[in-house]
Structure formats: structure tokens, C-alpha cells
Length: 460
Image (tube, rainbow, N blue to C red; front, side, top):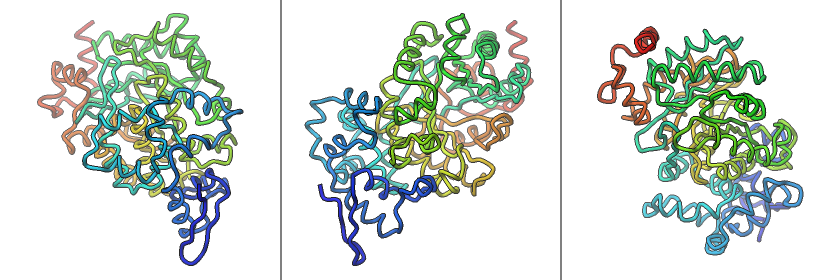
């Protein structure tokens, strides 16, 4: 394995494959903060050239987090398909890229090798792709998931209804849900980020949203995005949940910082399979985002993109219904501006889809980033072209509890109309039956929360 290359008359020598991966990454403020980014564009080009000749076998044998001290590394490696791994071990990263971008390669072809790919491999090939490459490759890697609704089908764009409230007021949460449903949002999940991480708060919000789902006969699922152990306590006591949520990291140290390990996830998945109100059987919901490992000093000197890909390699073994890349949430320390945010969103969506995950993206930014609404909207259009499963639906795109900017109810509705996409089929049938949608278009009743309140009263 040659780890040097001459470009522009200068020879660049890299000390490890981990260094090559870091310096081949597109510019990210998080990698610069960690002191591992390329010092110049010439060094980045040299690293990409070296990476293009690295084999998949090399990437498997040189994980960025040590095998002996990281259970994520050991677990993912133990789950790789040995026969397929042997067949593609000699492929270079450049050959994997050409395979994915070939007009002859189909979804079935991608599915045939997925079980032999790990996070380092997905990250490596993403680093050799342009934004258009990432869109084109992701579009052919579609992933369908099923709970009480079905996401990931062609021309289906889902929306997570995110009715957060700064005091966890049930009345405030319900007001946002009425408005969101009136725009056709909520087919991915009605998912609340609570202020208070207690089993009592989780149970109260789960019961309120479950009651509303039942009263409206609404085909969806609910979730309260507290710590997984808090949700488990509430569910064990009888709280009605459709999905179980947890943020995850790409290293054991990162998951420890989140207060979890593999056994926690196994227990949550088992509980969900037993208790969740979920017809499709995919009961987990994971969130990720570039930079979380660096923020907890659990990155092992690796770049944020590679660690993000390792999150996806871990997540797929728990068969989630939703995976959400919260792309701009951490802030400019990790993604400095709109350009970096757009690049990261396309990278993450591609890597997750390549590894077999039902990816959604929270196209978002914090108020201290050099990004704005136009950057957010540009990313959403690109992601729809790439086949993203769902976006967030936040009242006016401004989350009053988490204090960040995301996609609004009307953003998702507009994207559906612009691109010919529709809600999940089960949800669309419900919208048609109650008069909020006709032939894939919202009716004049749409956007009126009192219309949904009237539906609820009529059914009581």
C-alpha cells in the first residue's frame, strides 16, 4: 500500500491510511479544528490520488478506531459477509466509485455487495465523488422501510412532524400537530424532542400523541426523542410508542459519551419489537451528524466524515425505520458555512443509502453559522433529486425549543409539488379520504389547523 504521491512538483507522504482518509476529505471546519485536515488543495489532491488506489481489503484491515478497544469496529467487522468480502477485497476505491456510477449498475447490483461494505469503505468512495456523483449514486441506492407507513418508494417524500414546545406543553404540541397534518406532514413520524428527560414526560407526550393518532385513525407512528433508557422506562410502564429513538456515534467512546453501548441498543430493539405499535416491524429511529465524536473527544484522530459513515455501518444491524442526518445542527465548529453544510448533507445521505439505510436529512443550520435559508433550500432540492426518504416538518422552519432553522411544513409540501413526489401511500389515502389532498395535490383546506381539529371532533 503506497501512501505517497507527487503533485505540483511536491511529494506528499502520509503516515497512515487514517491520515489519507482525513486529508482526502473535502474542506470541513471540524477537521481543521482537530488538526487533521489537508494543509492545502495540493495535499488534498495527493491524498485523493493515494486513496483511489487503496483496496477495500486495506480499508477493512486498517479501521480508524482500533479493533481491540472499539466495540463498534469489532461488531461491524464481525457482521460483514465473508464470501462477498473475499470477492470484492481487491477492488480499489476508484473501482468501487466507477461501479456505483456506471449506468449499467442497478439497485440489485448494489444490494449484492452491501453486506461486505463497512463505514471506512463508504467514506472513502464518497471522498472521490463530486456533489453530482453523490446525488447520482445515492439515487440508485434507494431503501424502502415500513412501520405503519411506507417510506423510500419512488416519488415518495415523507415528513417528520416535529411539534416541539419549550415547556413540553401538550396543548402547544397539539396545535403544531394540527397545523402539520393539515399540510400533509407526519407520515414519517410525529416525533417530539422533549425539554425534560423523564419517563413521566415521555409517557405524557406518547399518550397524548397516541390518543390523537387513534382519534384521527391517522396512519403514522409516534416517538419522543429522549434518551433511549428513558423511553424504555416509559414503554415498560405501558406508554404507547411507535418507534424508539437514540443518537449514535461511530466509536465506542462516542457512544459512551451518549450514555449507551451495543447492549443498550440490543435491549431497546428487543423491547420495541415486543411493545411498539408498529405494523411493519422496523422499530428503531437513529440520529447522527458529522462532528459529534470530535465534540466528545472520541474521534480517535479520524475525520468526521469517516466517523459518520461508521455510524451508518452500525445502525443498519438494528433495521431502523428512520435514520436522520442532522446535518447542520452542531454548528460552525464542524461545518463552517452553507457550502460545507450542503456537501455534508449529500455525503451523509449517499453513505447511508449505500450501506442500506432509510436516510432522511434534517437540512438545517444554527443561527451562528454562515448559512441561510437559501442554502437550506438548495440542499433540499438536491436531496430530493438524490432520493432522500424524508425531511423535518417544523412550524415556520424555526424550532422554538432547539433554537435552530430547519424545513417547515410548507417547505416539504412545496418540494412534493415541485418534484411530483407524494406522501407515504397509506398517509396519502388518509389525506384523500378526509379532503386535504386530491390527485396528489393539497386542496384549499390544506394549511388550516382548524380543519384537522374539526376532523377530530367529528370522530369523537
